[in-house]
Length: 466
Ligand code: NAD
Image 1 (cartoon, protein in one colour):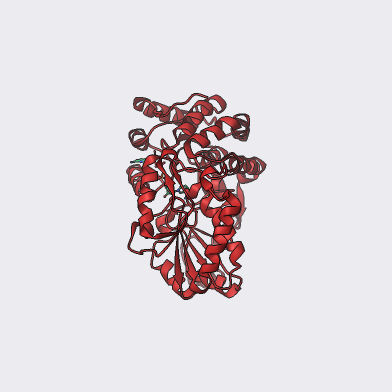
Image 2 (image 1 turned 90 degrees about the vertical axis):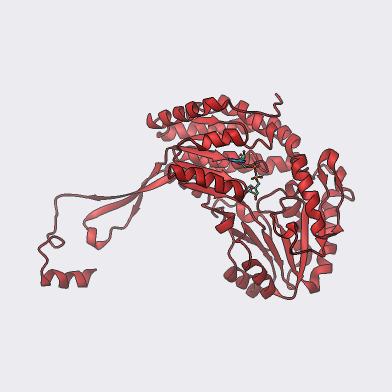
């Protein structure tokens, strides 16, 4: 495998590349379903035939355990694509809808048509999945697409830069490598949609660049995703499911539990159960475990070590700069004013805050930005219902973590500060399409009723039928 640690696409070539994508789109080459099917099948082949290269690159960039890389970055993409292939015809067919009486006789349809040339900008934490799932949706929807992987995961970026042109139609799918200068130049081009995944600060940069051309955007952002643990919760199961969702990818997951609000009466039992789960998962010393990842870069490592000072470690707290290791860490005695509680953590630190009751937890959450995900653990369904009713979040898993994002039947995305727009399943194709409304009339029958001159009699009829 070629190792290219600071990959950049020549900036001067970017406008030419996008012009090629535009010409291909205008040639209608991406319209036939056969073309789309072939590209999607080739994308699966790219992932399957080069599994080792992808998993090695994920290990180099993120210390990702092979099983984690396989499930979250490779199999996730192939299963989304398989669903697209299975439904390609159905999802690209005109949808017949009813016609209102005022427009009768006629037939009405919503015809899915591709938006055109779209741009997908991805972050580093699931660098294959977050680039290729939107890319596959764009292709299934009949678009051409420019792909920008994150420069923060350079090994994965290099593998993608080598394989994408090898497997996919180069006139319709282009990959641009690099960081801020390359992305800035890319965003200066005219696109028909921009799909950005990353932090909200850059989300604003993307939206401002898109505004120049009135380009619609999907922003898949992050935020602080809370967990509520009610006193009725099954504490052992809650601890195991939270530990899994939190320490997968060393906490570098957009929907990872960010902090826990727990009924004080069950807090000690929960911390004990978390400790047990961590030993079950990673042994007595997670530093030596093959199942635990690393922080993506020294810069991100330093930020997390600094964040730790917002609380007192109850579990973990150890770190090693040499291999960017931070132990699974649970923090008590948390300062609400600290950066720990005011920035998305995006790492393996879990602050725990004791609360008196669920109402207090709900108030805590509603006083803050809408999170990307929210988790509630309770056996009492009235508690679950109250939390669902009174809080807003991009998505929710009840008595679990992360899993709502695995369902292609549940559109995935944020709300407010956590983003706009959604994808996965059919939503992942629709996001790159315009559902063109068409009302089709015949000319044999042409009732005179709607036309002037208007009479009292006509008004009477309008009052009756409308
Ligand atoms: P990142 O640093 O890799 O940035 C994301 C992309 O933005 C990269 O491709 C990068 O090159 C580009 N970029 C950076 N600076 C830019 C600039 N000035 N102009 C234009 N483009 C620029 O990733 P990140 O932002 O650190 O990612 C982590 C964030 O992403 C977290 O907030 C996380 O919650 C969020 N996230 C959200 C989802 C989701 O699906 N909603 C998934 C993963 C991550």
